[in-house]
Length: 176
Image (cartoon, rainbow, N blue to C red; front, side, top):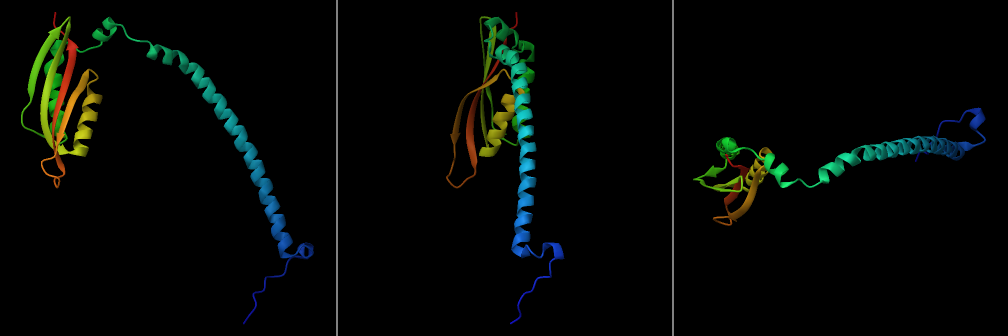
């Protein structure tokens, strides 16, 4: 059996031997990492200072956003009655685009104290993922839309599709 032999060390490093050379190399690497660690500490301190400055600048905006709206401000932000049909059409079109099958929808309009509420009952069927995407997209598209109720049924334990009945409310300002 042959023995593994390492090449000879240069003359200056011969007194250290291979173990000593490995130790010197490890010390050099440790010094390099310590220097890099100091740089990382300086960068972390700078980033923490930047975060503190951003928080101080954002504080007034957060306080303003947290202030409750008055009823008049909330009502003024609602869409008008003239937009009702387009908003309803957008909701129905979104269901079609996401390939949810719906049989019929029922609508009921109620008005009270300058506000109107169009209740929409929408039976649809599709996969759970399709329903989640539809609900999320509809609520994101129309900020004055609310999902009031949802009923889910599966016709058979082996089917992937669900039958859902969604009850929406389109809130708006009543026509004067």
